[in-house]
Image (cartoon, rainbow, N blue to C red; front, side):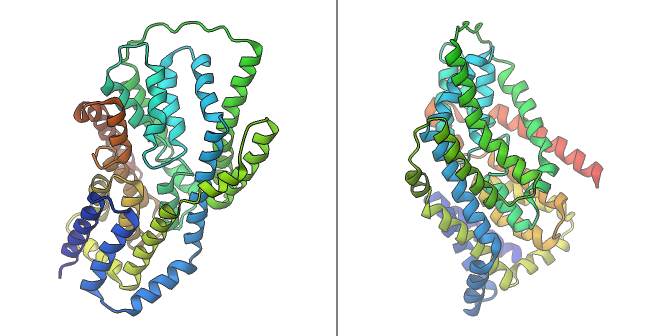
Length: 405
């Protein structure tokens, strides 16, 4: 059977499973099992792929990194630091426009499935005395939550991508980080600038309130900034850096008299379902490797009439649309890129950026569905400015990539 037909059927199986609300890990693994059954049905491949998955360092690096990300989110949320930061920013910034853009962006640094539900009430509160439409609120909440997809060292998709690519996260961020700045600028131009907001009422704060504002902002920003510095400038792995930040925050929160249940931080963060999804995805990758299905895919791509980079861009974009998850297009496309062009950061960058664009304009994206439900907004009106921005980002990125080759 033609390898492209095999991939197409496998993708249909994965999408069917996702539409039936099965977890992404088992869904992707089932697609891999279909490819194994058609292409190389040798039972020993199961054992070899399983052994390699359980003995590879990248498996445990990713598992621990994701676990500590969840620990940090619980620390900031249960200690009241995030709520305090929202109130502080509303008092500190001269316009509600800053709060509308910055708070979803900041909360997007702490990734969680459907996390747009966490930032939606903040957008609603910041705009409650305005005539902003539900669609405008929805676009702002959804779009700004994802501007750091290109540069966030604790984003699961970024961590997984670097694990598969065998590239330091710092190198990947340096390569793509400028897109986060571009994304913020374009988001401000198309989503924030058109808003007509009334002058903000002057709020007189006491010295104690100002001190608390500074403390809340510092406590919320510190772990993200420190982790970024450890990963980018000190070349420390994501798992170790996140672990150090989580432990350090325990002492810092205690020192500032914040309520924190340490046991709950580490117990409630043990999301077995998500961690098993990661193991399934890595097992899927190894199964494709030991059966040499990846080799067949690479050979087929290399003999295709279109340049490999164009093919990867198109495939990543389509998979991003179909899955609506960064882990989805990363798990499916990046192993192919790793086999085609190992260590080629340009090719990996293309796969990431086009995959992100796909997941930003699809109804399968959980954050979009959560946002639309919260604001009771129209799908197409909400997505219109987002789609325009993504088109501009892809155009600018494609031009700069082409000129740099």
